[in-house]
Image (cartoon, rainbow, N blue to C red):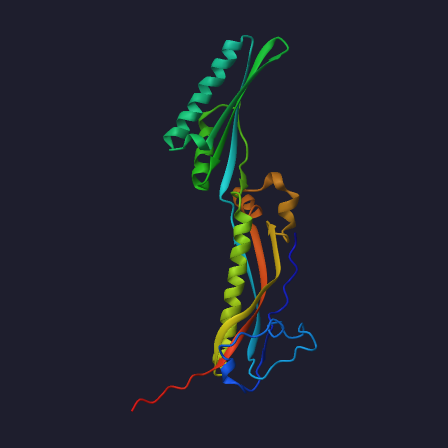
Length: 259
C-alpha cells in the first residue's frame, strides 16, 4: 500500500476573551469540543472557551525480527538402508552443529520422506531453522555450505515478523503522533504567553501501514537476486498516523507576593 505525501501540519488557534473565570475547570459541551469548521452552525463558541487546535503526524518502522532457513538433504540409492544412512549421517551433522551453537529444539523442525524412484529409493530430509539473530544465521549457513557437499541445499532466508508486530507498530505511530501534536501545542502556548491545559478532543484522522520501500522498483523486479540486507529492507514494515487534538488554553497564573 503506497502512502500519499501527508499535507503540511496545520496549527491554528482560537482565543476568546475570558469572560468567566469559573469556566476554567468546567467541562465544555460536546459541540464546543468539535474542531473549527466541523461544529454545528448553532453551536457558537461561548465566552471563556479558549482552545488550541493542532494536528500531528508520525511515521515509524520496524525491521523483521525472524528469519526462516530451510536445509534440504537428499540421497538416491538402490537399497533403502543405504539412502537412509547417507541422509541421516549428514542430518546428524547438521543438528549437532546447531546444538553446539545453542539452538533450542523449538527453533528447529526436522521432517523425513522416502519414496521409490524407478528402481531406486530416494530419501529427503528437511531442516527448518528459525533465527532471531541474523549475524548468527549467516555464520551457520556459510559453515554448512563449506562443510557439506552439493547434495545439501540451503534455501535463501525468508524474513518475517512475529504475530502482532503490525498492530504494535500502528499503536506506536499513533502515540508518537499524539506526542508531536502535544509538543507543538506546548510551544505555541509558550510563544504567546499562555498555559496549555488538558486535551478536550483526540482524534486519529488517518492511519496507514505498508511493507518494504514502495519507491524502490528495483527490489520488486529482482526478488531472487537480493542481498540479505536488501531482503531485510524489503521485509521492513512501516506505519503512519495523523491525529487532530484540541487542547484547553489557560492564562498564565500570577505569582502571589508574600509579605
